[in-house]
Length: 50
Image: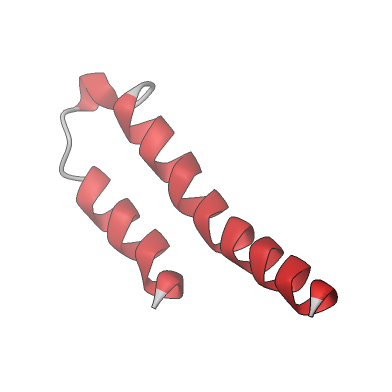
């Protein structure tokens, strides 16, 4: 499910005005890349504890 997030965010942000390229668009794309990594990290931590 979260692996579909990044392409969806990139597709959506392509429709944003060009003036947003270095602010909102950039911020959303960076966040979309970190979400799967954060989920993976939390799962790894929980599996190590249990």
